[in-house]
Length: 302
Image (cartoon, rainbow, N blue to C red; front, side):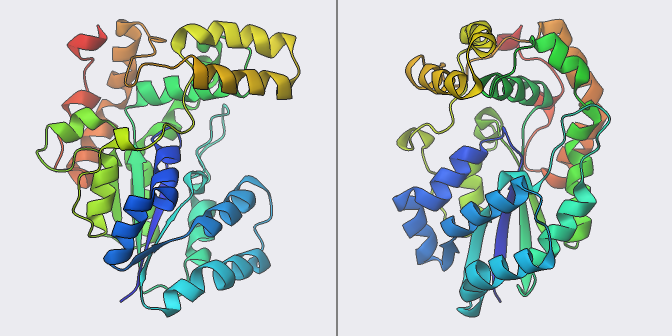
Protein backbone atom coordinates (compact mmCIF):
# COMPACT_ATOMS: atom_id res chain seq x y z
CA UNK A 1 0.00 0.00 0.00
CA UNK A 2 1.49 3.32 -1.11
CA UNK A 3 1.74 6.05 1.52
CA UNK A 4 2.27 9.76 0.95
CA UNK A 5 4.17 11.37 3.82
CA UNK A 6 3.27 15.07 3.63
CA UNK A 7 5.20 17.59 5.72
CA UNK A 8 2.99 20.69 5.88
CA UNK A 9 5.06 22.91 8.21
CA UNK A 10 4.92 24.86 10.31
CA UNK A 11 7.10 27.69 9.10
CA UNK A 12 9.86 28.76 11.53
CA UNK A 13 9.95 25.19 12.84
CA UNK A 14 12.95 23.89 10.92
CA UNK A 15 11.06 23.68 7.64
CA UNK A 16 13.98 24.94 5.53
CA UNK A 17 16.20 22.34 7.20
CA UNK A 18 13.63 19.62 6.47
CA UNK A 19 13.29 20.74 2.84
CA UNK A 20 17.04 20.76 2.31
CA UNK A 21 17.68 17.51 4.17
CA UNK A 22 14.95 15.32 2.74
CA UNK A 23 15.23 16.65 -0.79
CA UNK A 24 18.96 17.36 -1.17
CA UNK A 25 21.06 15.74 1.57
CA UNK A 26 22.42 12.75 -0.35
CA UNK A 27 22.94 10.44 2.61
CA UNK A 28 19.37 10.87 3.79
CA UNK A 29 17.82 10.67 0.31
CA UNK A 30 19.70 7.42 -0.36
CA UNK A 31 18.68 6.00 3.03
CA UNK A 32 15.04 6.73 2.21
CA UNK A 33 15.36 5.15 -1.22
CA UNK A 34 16.67 1.94 0.39
CA UNK A 35 13.47 1.58 2.41
CA UNK A 36 11.26 2.39 -0.59
CA UNK A 37 10.56 6.09 -0.06
CA UNK A 38 11.08 8.54 -2.91
CA UNK A 39 11.44 12.31 -2.43
CA UNK A 40 9.96 15.04 -4.61
CA UNK A 41 12.11 18.17 -5.10
CA UNK A 42 10.26 19.17 -8.29
CA UNK A 43 6.93 18.92 -6.50
CA UNK A 44 8.21 21.24 -3.78
CA UNK A 45 9.14 23.89 -6.35
CA UNK A 46 5.77 23.61 -8.09
CA UNK A 47 3.75 23.66 -4.87
CA UNK A 48 5.60 26.72 -3.53
CA UNK A 49 4.54 28.68 -6.62
CA UNK A 50 0.92 27.59 -6.31
CA UNK A 51 0.55 27.97 -2.55
CA UNK A 52 2.13 31.42 -2.50
CA UNK A 53 0.07 32.53 -5.50
CA UNK A 54 -3.66 32.61 -6.05
CA UNK A 55 -4.15 29.83 -8.61
CA UNK A 56 -6.12 27.18 -6.75
CA UNK A 57 -8.29 25.85 -9.59
CA UNK A 58 -8.80 22.16 -10.34
CA UNK A 59 -6.69 22.41 -13.50
CA UNK A 60 -3.61 23.35 -11.46
CA UNK A 61 -4.32 20.55 -9.00
CA UNK A 62 -4.67 18.06 -11.80
CA UNK A 63 -1.50 19.04 -13.64
CA UNK A 64 0.71 18.98 -10.56
CA UNK A 65 -0.80 15.74 -9.32
CA UNK A 66 -0.58 13.93 -12.67
CA UNK A 67 2.92 15.15 -13.54
CA UNK A 68 4.69 15.11 -10.16
CA UNK A 69 2.80 12.76 -7.82
CA UNK A 70 0.97 10.10 -9.83
CA UNK A 71 4.12 8.68 -11.52
CA UNK A 72 5.54 7.91 -8.07
CA UNK A 73 2.26 6.48 -6.85
CA UNK A 74 2.07 4.13 -9.83
CA UNK A 75 5.36 2.50 -8.79
CA UNK A 76 3.85 1.42 -5.49
CA UNK A 77 6.58 3.19 -3.55
CA UNK A 78 5.99 5.53 -0.64
CA UNK A 79 6.49 9.24 -1.30
CA UNK A 80 7.77 12.10 0.86
CA UNK A 81 6.84 15.69 0.06
CA UNK A 82 7.35 18.95 1.95
CA UNK A 83 5.86 22.43 1.70
CA UNK A 84 5.75 24.53 4.84
CA UNK A 85 3.18 26.96 3.48
CA UNK A 86 0.58 24.22 3.02
CA UNK A 87 -0.43 24.92 6.60
CA UNK A 88 -1.41 28.50 5.84
CA UNK A 89 -0.62 30.25 9.12
CA UNK A 90 -1.99 33.79 9.20
CA UNK A 91 -0.22 36.54 11.14
CA UNK A 92 -2.35 39.57 10.29
CA UNK A 93 -4.75 40.81 12.98
CA UNK A 94 -8.26 39.41 12.72
CA UNK A 95 -7.41 36.83 10.04
CA UNK A 96 -7.92 33.20 11.14
CA UNK A 97 -5.90 30.36 9.66
CA UNK A 98 -7.54 29.20 6.40
CA UNK A 99 -7.33 25.55 7.45
CA UNK A 100 -10.53 24.41 5.76
CA UNK A 101 -9.34 25.80 2.43
CA UNK A 102 -5.82 24.38 2.81
CA UNK A 103 -7.10 20.94 3.81
CA UNK A 104 -9.43 20.91 0.82
CA UNK A 105 -6.48 21.86 -1.39
CA UNK A 106 -4.41 19.02 0.07
CA UNK A 107 -7.20 16.46 -0.25
CA UNK A 108 -7.46 17.20 -3.96
CA UNK A 109 -3.70 17.21 -4.44
CA UNK A 110 -3.16 13.91 -2.64
CA UNK A 111 -6.04 12.07 -4.26
CA UNK A 112 -5.20 8.51 -5.32
CA UNK A 113 -2.84 7.54 -2.50
CA UNK A 114 -4.03 4.65 -0.38
CA UNK A 115 -2.81 6.45 2.72
CA UNK A 116 -1.75 10.02 3.53
CA UNK A 117 0.33 10.66 6.65
CA UNK A 118 0.47 14.31 7.66
CA UNK A 119 3.66 15.55 9.38
CA UNK A 120 3.35 18.70 11.51
CA UNK A 121 6.36 20.20 13.30
CA UNK A 122 5.61 22.69 16.09
CA UNK A 123 7.70 25.07 18.17
CA UNK A 124 7.18 26.62 21.58
CA UNK A 125 5.07 29.65 20.84
CA UNK A 126 7.27 32.35 22.38
CA UNK A 127 10.27 31.18 20.35
CA UNK A 128 8.10 30.77 17.27
CA UNK A 129 6.95 34.38 17.59
CA UNK A 130 10.54 35.61 18.02
CA UNK A 131 11.71 33.65 15.00
CA UNK A 132 8.76 34.92 12.95
CA UNK A 133 9.72 38.50 13.83
CA UNK A 134 13.36 37.81 12.92
CA UNK A 135 12.25 36.54 9.52
CA UNK A 136 10.03 39.58 8.97
CA UNK A 137 12.96 41.91 9.69
CA UNK A 138 14.96 39.99 7.08
CA UNK A 139 12.11 40.70 4.66
CA UNK A 140 11.92 44.43 5.29
CA UNK A 141 10.05 44.97 8.58
CA UNK A 142 10.83 48.35 10.17
CA UNK A 143 8.68 48.17 13.31
CA UNK A 144 10.03 47.05 16.66
CA UNK A 145 9.13 43.72 18.23
CA UNK A 146 6.47 45.12 20.54
CA UNK A 147 4.55 46.75 17.69
CA UNK A 148 4.51 43.53 15.67
CA UNK A 149 3.60 41.42 18.71
CA UNK A 150 0.58 43.62 19.45
CA UNK A 151 -0.86 42.81 16.02
CA UNK A 152 -0.27 39.07 15.92
CA UNK A 153 -3.28 36.74 15.98
CA UNK A 154 -2.09 34.67 18.93
CA UNK A 155 -5.00 32.24 18.70
CA UNK A 156 -3.68 31.14 15.31
CA UNK A 157 -0.74 29.45 17.07
CA UNK A 158 -2.75 26.94 19.10
CA UNK A 159 -1.08 23.86 17.64
CA UNK A 160 -3.66 21.43 19.04
CA UNK A 161 -6.44 23.13 17.06
CA UNK A 162 -4.38 22.91 13.87
CA UNK A 163 -3.49 19.25 14.49
CA UNK A 164 -7.14 18.41 15.14
CA UNK A 165 -8.25 20.00 11.87
CA UNK A 166 -5.70 18.14 9.75
CA UNK A 167 -6.31 14.89 11.62
CA UNK A 168 -10.03 15.10 10.91
CA UNK A 169 -9.35 16.06 7.29
CA UNK A 170 -7.28 12.92 6.71
CA UNK A 171 -8.93 10.58 9.25
CA UNK A 172 -7.73 9.91 12.79
CA UNK A 173 -4.33 8.29 13.18
CA UNK A 174 -2.86 9.78 10.01
CA UNK A 175 -0.96 12.67 11.57
CA UNK A 176 2.31 12.83 13.47
CA UNK A 177 3.23 15.94 15.45
CA UNK A 178 6.88 16.55 16.28
CA UNK A 179 8.34 19.27 18.54
CA UNK A 180 11.12 21.32 16.97
CA UNK A 181 13.27 21.52 20.12
CA UNK A 182 16.23 19.12 20.27
CA UNK A 183 16.25 19.46 24.07
CA UNK A 184 12.86 17.75 24.23
CA UNK A 185 14.03 14.86 22.06
CA UNK A 186 17.19 14.46 24.14
CA UNK A 187 15.09 13.64 27.17
CA UNK A 188 13.21 10.80 25.43
CA UNK A 189 16.14 8.45 24.84
CA UNK A 190 14.84 7.98 21.30
CA UNK A 191 15.47 10.10 18.18
CA UNK A 192 18.06 12.85 18.69
CA UNK A 193 16.04 15.52 16.90
CA UNK A 194 12.98 16.05 14.74
CA UNK A 195 14.90 15.12 11.56
CA UNK A 196 15.68 11.72 13.03
CA UNK A 197 12.11 11.35 14.29
CA UNK A 198 10.66 12.05 10.83
CA UNK A 199 13.20 9.65 9.27
CA UNK A 200 12.26 6.89 11.70
CA UNK A 201 8.58 7.44 10.94
CA UNK A 202 9.40 6.41 7.37
CA UNK A 203 11.57 3.45 8.34
CA UNK A 204 15.05 4.98 8.36
CA UNK A 205 16.34 4.06 11.80
CA UNK A 206 19.35 6.35 11.89
CA UNK A 207 20.02 9.27 14.21
CA UNK A 208 21.23 11.99 11.90
CA UNK A 209 23.51 14.66 13.32
CA UNK A 210 22.23 18.04 12.12
CA UNK A 211 25.80 19.38 12.32
CA UNK A 212 26.49 17.38 9.16
CA UNK A 213 23.97 19.48 7.24
CA UNK A 214 24.67 23.05 6.06
CA UNK A 215 22.75 25.84 7.80
CA UNK A 216 19.86 26.94 5.59
CA UNK A 217 17.81 30.13 5.95
CA UNK A 218 19.71 31.33 9.05
CA UNK A 219 18.15 33.94 11.32
CA UNK A 220 19.72 37.29 11.97
CA UNK A 221 21.80 37.52 15.13
CA UNK A 222 19.65 39.25 17.77
CA UNK A 223 21.93 42.30 18.05
CA UNK A 224 21.65 42.78 14.27
CA UNK A 225 17.87 43.23 14.30
CA UNK A 226 17.96 46.95 15.12
CA UNK A 227 20.66 47.54 12.52
CA UNK A 228 18.69 45.67 9.88
CA UNK A 229 15.55 47.68 10.63
CA UNK A 230 17.52 50.88 10.00
CA UNK A 231 18.80 49.35 6.75
CA UNK A 232 15.22 48.50 5.77
CA UNK A 233 14.26 52.16 6.25
CA UNK A 234 17.21 53.55 4.31
CA UNK A 235 17.43 51.20 1.31
CA UNK A 236 15.07 49.78 -1.27
CA UNK A 237 13.58 46.38 -0.48
CA UNK A 238 15.84 44.40 -2.81
CA UNK A 239 19.05 45.99 -1.50
CA UNK A 240 17.95 45.63 2.13
CA UNK A 241 17.16 41.95 1.56
CA UNK A 242 20.63 41.37 0.09
CA UNK A 243 22.24 43.01 3.11
CA UNK A 244 20.09 40.84 5.42
CA UNK A 245 21.33 37.74 3.60
CA UNK A 246 24.94 38.86 4.02
CA UNK A 247 24.47 39.59 7.73
CA UNK A 248 22.74 36.28 8.42
CA UNK A 249 25.44 34.35 6.56
CA UNK A 250 28.53 36.27 7.75
CA UNK A 251 27.54 37.50 11.23
CA UNK A 252 26.43 34.13 12.50
CA UNK A 253 23.93 33.60 15.29
CA UNK A 254 25.03 31.11 17.93
CA UNK A 255 23.01 27.91 17.29
CA UNK A 256 20.28 27.56 19.88
CA UNK A 257 21.01 30.94 21.48
CA UNK A 258 17.98 32.77 22.85
CA UNK A 259 16.90 35.82 20.87
CA UNK A 260 15.89 37.61 24.06
CA UNK A 261 13.06 39.65 22.54
CA UNK A 262 10.80 38.75 25.47
CA UNK A 263 11.63 39.48 29.08
CA UNK A 264 11.43 36.34 31.24
CA UNK A 265 8.16 37.64 32.69
CA UNK A 266 6.61 38.32 29.30
CA UNK A 267 7.85 34.98 28.03
CA UNK A 268 6.11 33.18 30.89
CA UNK A 269 2.90 35.10 30.13
CA UNK A 270 3.00 33.74 26.59
CA UNK A 271 3.53 30.21 27.88
CA UNK A 272 0.65 30.63 30.32
CA UNK A 273 -1.57 31.78 27.46
CA UNK A 274 -0.96 28.51 25.60
CA UNK A 275 -0.64 26.19 28.62
CA UNK A 276 -3.93 24.30 28.25
CA UNK A 277 -3.54 24.09 24.47
CA UNK A 278 -0.02 22.69 24.78
CA UNK A 279 -0.97 20.21 27.50
CA UNK A 280 -3.68 18.86 25.25
CA UNK A 281 -1.34 18.84 22.24
CA UNK A 282 1.28 16.70 23.97
CA UNK A 283 -1.22 14.41 25.65
CA UNK A 284 -3.02 13.66 22.38
CA UNK A 285 -0.29 13.87 19.74
CA UNK A 286 3.14 13.78 21.42
CA UNK A 287 2.76 11.42 24.40
CA UNK A 288 6.36 10.19 24.05
CA UNK A 289 7.66 13.64 25.03
CA UNK A 290 7.31 15.74 28.16
CA UNK A 291 5.29 18.95 27.88
CA UNK A 292 7.20 20.65 30.72
CA UNK A 293 9.42 22.80 28.49
CA UNK A 294 6.29 24.19 26.81
CA UNK A 295 4.84 25.28 30.14
CA UNK A 296 7.61 27.08 32.03
CA UNK A 297 10.58 29.30 31.31
CA UNK A 298 13.75 27.32 31.96
CA UNK A 299 16.52 28.44 34.28
CA UNK A 300 18.76 29.18 31.28
CA UNK A 301 16.10 31.56 29.89
CA UNK A 302 15.70 33.60 33.07
